[in-house]
Amino acid sequence: MTSHGSAPRDAKFQYRWVADELRKEINSEAYGPGERLATQEELASRFGVSRATVSQALAILRKEELIVTRQGSGSYVASEPDETRQVPAPTGSPEGGVWAVVSERVPPVLLRPYLVEAFEANVVKLDVFSMTTESLAARVVDQKDRIVAGEVSPPRSIAARLLLPNTESTALAIPRQVSGEDDPRVRARLGGILHSHVTMLRSALFELRRLKLVEEVDVQVRLVPFAPQMKLYILNNRVVLQGFYIPEEGTATLPDGEEIATYDAYGTGATLYPFRASADSTPEQAGVVRAARKFFNATWENLATRAAF
Image (cartoon, rainbow, N blue to C red):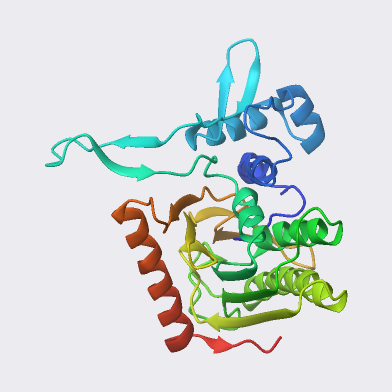
């Protein structure tokens, strides 16, 4: 999932870019659950776009159920009730009643609360399959800062395994020109974004070892010759967070300033759905965690190659 950077000049894509930036801020908790967003006039001024563009962007976030709009009051980040979320069964379901239960009491859009919990363990294990690790790197830096500041006891060890797309592979479905043509410049752009965030994550974790706060730190990166369709976090082998990369048409701005229409999965704020394997978990929850671990391990061992960085 790659970042837009500056606003695209093509008005066709500006509302998607604005939605992307706001989604990123919601995911990073710049806006918390229940908090009011800036007014449309303020957002238009901030992003340098029209109010109509802002309105289209907010419509996307409402459709994704990330915000709610109250007549005469403005738009607010959606809040989850402090209770188990139950999803009604589809029509014709033989079981009736509830067919899926998300037992977490944290809004599924947020990654940070789960990493806070993960880093409070004595042994921290992070298995991640994503496009760039952009969301993860920022949140890991937050946890590093908490440990350095003495806000939380440091773990004894931290191990991270990162599965990422090989940007040298011509088989990547995204990012790719809308025409379907493979463009090495588009892949190189993704590679630069990917490399910068992996470097940020590695630097944060190894700083903890350098400061002698964490005894053991291990970060391994392997590459697969395809783009992930799903973002997957497995935290301490017990919590799974998953979200889908939605291919959308947008623009990629190349280093020379040329803009190319591409299909990509934009933004760092993919909605995450949590599953937990614990004593009080439902069989469905625990089953998802087991399947995710099996999927990750098999992909890591059988399809991935060691990264050169």
